[in-house]
Length: 113
Image 1 (cartoon, one colour):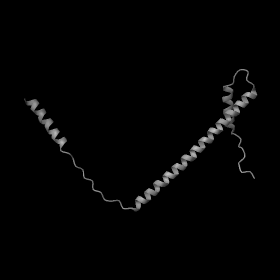
Image 2 (cartoon, one colour):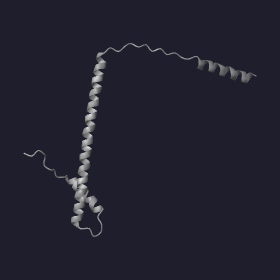
Image 3 (cartoon, one colour):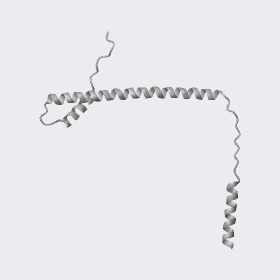
Image 4 (tube, helix red, strand yellow):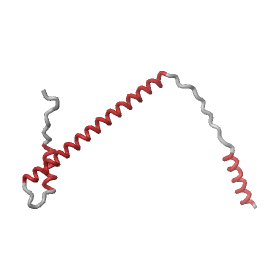
């Protein structure tokens, strides 16, 4: 029994796409065999790119799953503990009111003098 899977044939779409690119970059005097070899190289590049993207996607999914698991654990732990009752007191400073009053007094003094 083989440990590794058999080499998969590239999809028809990938083959067509690589052949289209190879023909678009074809030089004058280039044989069909050379074009076919170029298409195979492009095809391998496309396959390698797809493998890299799948690997990145798997890694990202693992990270997302790990983070979401940590978040759910944190939420469960937070749900079990009673939140401390905190009273928020808002205190305004008197300086803005003093400045407003002084500006209005100054404006009134300017108009009436």
